[in-house]
Image (cartoon, rainbow, N blue to C red):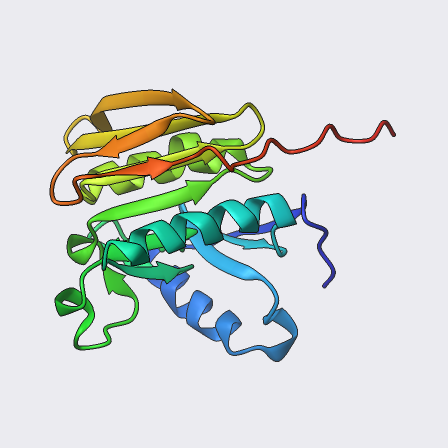
Amino acid sequence: MTLTHHETAEETVRDDTGHELLRFLETLPELDQLRIELIDGKIVMQASAAPFHNRIVARLSAQFLAEEWEVLPEQAMISDISSFEPKADLTVTTAEKIADNRNPLPADRVDLVVEVVSSDRDSDYVKKRMWYAMSEVPFYLLVDPNDGTVELCSHPDPRKLRYRTTDRFQFGDTVELPAPFSFGVDTSQFKLYPPKPPR
C-alpha cells in the first residue's frame, strides 16, 4: 500500500474489534511508515507528515522538555470511549504517570495533547477534539499551519462533548499555558504551509 502525505486509508470496524485490528496492523513491517489510529470507529492510516509539520512538532517538543515535562510523539491513547485510539502528534504528561510503561496510555494520565493539522482538518477540529474532551484531557493545543492559527482548548465538558473554553492565537503570538504548566509557548518560528501547486 502506498500513500502520499495527503492521502489516508480508512476502514470501518466494530468497536469491539477496532483495537485488536489496530494491534495487528502495527505488527506488519510494510506499514511501519504509517501512523495508524482508530478514529470514530474507523482505522485511519496516514503517511509521513511534511517537513513544516514535523518542524512545528519538534519545536513544541523542545519547549515542553525544557520545562521538564515528558513529551511522547504519536503515543496511542485510550479511554472509556472505545471507538477511538488516537495518536496525537505530542502527548504531554509527567514521569510518574508513565512509570509503569502502560501502552496504550490511559487518557486520564495525560495533561495536554498537541495536534498539528495536516490534510484531514475534520479529524483534528471535530472528531479528535470531541474525544479529547469526552476523555477529559485537560488541554488540547491545536496548531494549523494552513492559516497560521493556534487554538488552546481547556475545561473539558464530557457531557456536551466539547471544551468549554477555546482561546485563539496567531502564529507569532505567545500562548500562555495555565497551571500546571505556567509558561508561554513561543510560536514565532512556526511557518505556514506553502501554497499547493496547481494541478
